[in-house]
Length: 249
Image (cartoon, rainbow, N blue to C red):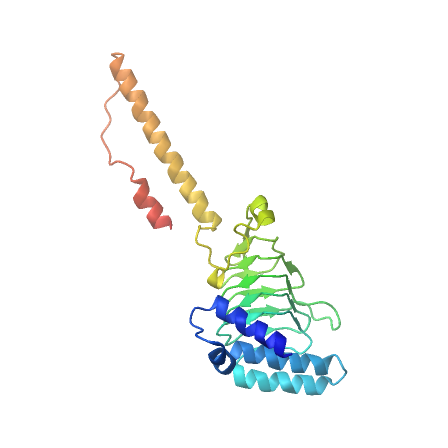
């Protein structure tokens, strides 16, 4: 138990720049307290002391503001940052090295008792603040769920899900295999290289418009040099691609 506790403390220090030392993490981090108390509750739950397990989870909810059903399976080095308002359902599975921020729900959409109703997060998944992950599906290894996303379908390994309803951004598969970028930690599931597909599509259209404008100017200059007069058209402002890209970003 103490070995796992040491692992949890070290993983929090690695992922949270505000964590100054192990003693501060041990005494002041509700996410760690919730994980420890869930371990007690889960132990009782799996040994047919279900009321005791539920009561421990209820006490943990009062103390930490984090509600984890004692039936949920939580892996090692899971970090619940800030944590207030986090809800993890009975059949949820959270893999090793996952990071969950405040206001996250790992919820179920089925009312059938005994069935797998809640999501499975594989190793290294990051779920941003306020995200709702609802249903019995799998979020692949090192995937990211952006803040306030509403996720209702599986996410491939290394991908990012953003929006409401969430849409999937597929990362480079070769990079995922090599591990060069897929395993980098991204706070709140925010990636620095702009994974939003709408943003990428708009930037592509802006780049295409700039290329078209340059091509038209080249054609006009060539025609004028050949002595071919074109019908005069009113001049318009130049297309400022840098300003447009800033607005998109």
